[in-house]
Amino acid sequence: MKKWLVACLLAMALLFVTTAAMAGHNKANGEYCLGGSYGLLKEYENQHLRRCNDCQEELLENHWVGQEATCIRKAKCGDCTKRFGEYGPHDYGDWTPNGNGTHTRTCKRNCKLDNRTETENCTFSVAPCAEPAACTVCGGVYSTGHDWGWTPNGDQTHTRVCTRDSSHTETEDCGDFWEADCVYPAICSVCRGEYGEADLSNHSWDMWESNGDGTHTRICNRERSHTET
Image (cartoon, rainbow, N blue to C red; front, side, top):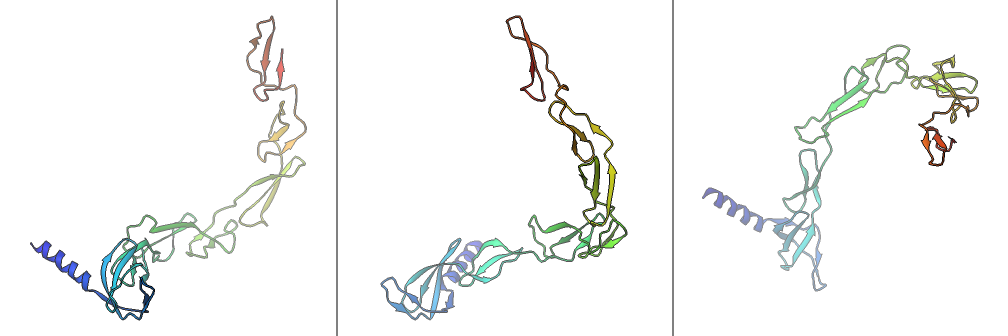
């Protein structure tokens, strides 16, 4: 009984809600009504239906943002009680260092959205590979070592440059080569630099297969155009 009474009271309240008009409106017959106040009749997902109390014209209108959305509430329409659209932005707290070169921040509101926590890599004004440095965002102090990447120099040497500080470089001789084969020249196993020419005598043959005419053929599995009969 109580639930039925509450439902009736809510329906009556919705029917008689009035809002001050920001401006007049055009009626269906083309005349202009100065308006004054409106009664709210119905609310839909993205629209609401109001009745002008001056001319009794019914107006189906899109919701508009009267209260901005947050991560715990959708936007509220300025002319009705409906909340609509998507959830808004988080209210993040401060970044906290994780001790591994990253930092994390968490939304301060008690929201249930999946992205309420963010984790990003720390950023440094001075590369932390030579000595400890503080992250410019969270203040965490790290010494991470170099972030190397070898590049061939074309003369059987290779150089690596630290991506955190380009003044940190090292150059060494290429020493461990994969031998040339019928497709590729000799290749440094460290920097992938290629040297010399392909060795057309160094194939990787499949098994011999009969041709049915007293001959047999084998095919190189590196390059299928290389055959012997």
